[in-house]
Amino acid sequence: MDKRLLLVHAHPDDESIGQGATMARYAAEGVGVTLVTCTGGEMGEILVPEMAHMAADRDDTLADQRRIELTNAMKELAPGEGQSIDHRYLGGFGKYRDSGMKWHEDGHAVPADDIHDNAFWNADLTEAADDLVAVIREVRPQVLVTYDQFGGYGHPDHIQAHRVATYAAALAAVPSYRRDLGEPHEIAKVYWGAMSASRMREGLRRLREAGDTTTFEGMDPDGPLPPFIADDADLAAVVDAGDYVDRKLAAMRAHATQIAVDGPFFALSNNIGSQVWGSEFFRIAKGKQGPLNDDGLETDLFAGLAGQ
Image (cartoon, rainbow, N blue to C red):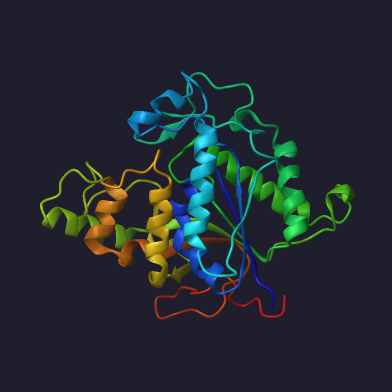
């Protein structure tokens, strides 16, 4: 079977944090990996002081820098000879702008008070879905990966990416819908990226035992966890890509304006390494699980799709 995987993410860097190891593993195995990024990440927080002038309230050129970072990240994920990741911006670079966000008092993200006219959050759902329908019908993936309905932690662009991906997957399969966008194609399996609660608790516990109280400050290994962390009972699949965790971390470093090398992601990695970042988990939203391991999880997102 000629395997093809499509991932839909909101901003540059989301892909490397969420499924970087999975993308690296499948690219190395010859799977066709396509990433669609929905915005340029214009509203991101800039961690490099020398680039502070790129901020939205100054030069407003951050998207150009993040485009370079994303290109470099894709090279880190697929550095081998003959390896590559097919990357597109939804509707073309610059069509949909990062919507920004603010923090709700309950600890999750919500839309910002002021949102740009062409912010992704304001996008017409059908128009944005049509942009993705064209990609789906061209690439013809068997598997789609995106966010859950809450976008992991409530970011409006993550929620919108979920909506667009879900609607586009449905429309792409309708034979009579927008014939000009290509031949109909039904995606066999849809997954939502997730983090394992048990793995996160283990990582937090080790951090706290080592005396680190600032990484993921406020998170108690035995207390409530943020909504982007899923109960293990809700998980359907795990991709073991420990051999590719170095590629994932290199891709994360490539997003230098957004991810601090001394920040919580790398602190957690230094603490328990590939146990956290080398195994990436998923909830299944469409399709049937294939063969399961002893933990009741698929170990291949294409499981059960032989010959499709």
